[in-house]
Length: 243
Length: 243
Image (cartoon, rainbow over the protein chains, first blue to last red):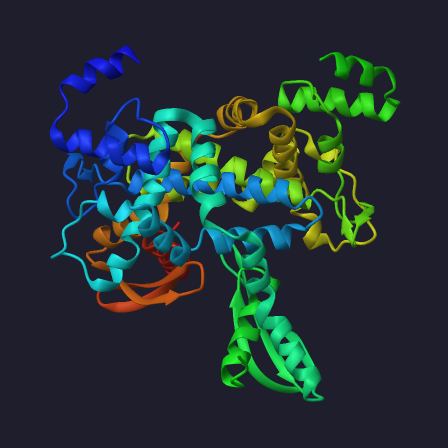
């Protein structure tokens, strides 16, 4: 803490502003500002430090992704003691998806602290900058303050205020149940058929087909059979214009 | 601790045996035996607890996978401060791969504590039982003893004694450098070409083609460009019979 006070006196105006932002976003003051400064630097503005490796936020993003993964896994594990791992995996992947993190990052103001070169990036790669920076910020909190405080940040500042898990569950189940409901109303039968299991080096991918009255309607892909079914049901709802 | 001693008196012979095994494998005694008992029960022998959900080790496996992911990510992050996130991701995925965990689980004796129904499983699904049980055991340590002790278990009992990371790095780089070395010896040029980027729901997959003297030789797939290159180089080494 003493170190921190000494450090504070020599801080620039920008650094003090960053500290204030971190305090608001994370809920606690940094001990060491360095990892947070790195976290807010996109690779397009980062300087090279050694052997061509840039001091960009990508290393912290890799670490933060793993911290977020564990904290969210544990949170859902404890919240739903009687749900199976397929359910837990599905809910987690919805929470930590690119779209979800990009949206969350903007909500909590990460877009105001990230630095990137607007000329060098295409609009598409811009989209994920905020979500990636949020992961890097989680990585910085982990490096600076350890696991327990990272967990507090994620649970108290991200999960509880910004995610309605019951809502996620209901929309997650939606497509398959929507499709089955529609089929029953219209006197049709819905079935799902595993077409293919692709064995990749580090994972499996499933391809599932949905049939209405034995006629193939749509295909879906996913890292689990459940996800592939949902994906197929979603495609079927779109093509059959079921709202 | 008092609770633990009280609990100990009422333990069966099997429970005492399990405690001794856990002490050897994990390096510390359990506070509460229950999660460890669940961790050693494969779904084929697990009993139903509620709404058809079995008290099998799959939920703990889901949690342990995330704990292992973070601990390994952090270990490599700190060990290689100047390596980029592509390198870190690659090394981590080699350490936590199915094959690697299955082998490790047998080495440390997880195969002696897992219970499963030998009649119900095909030989192929047997293969991953040990690795999955190891992940479930990590999950149990996390539930019982928290993050710091799980980290100690993983680093001191798994990573340090069983993984030679320099060896992993050299074999990871092998195929691409082997192929380039062979090309140079034979006066040929090797190049890699990105054929396709498949945008999946929760990840991207890259397809890369390797060309020798501008002639396509092999294709590779992977979750990063580096992995896809390695995969393509591996295929090329096989088809060109480069040892």
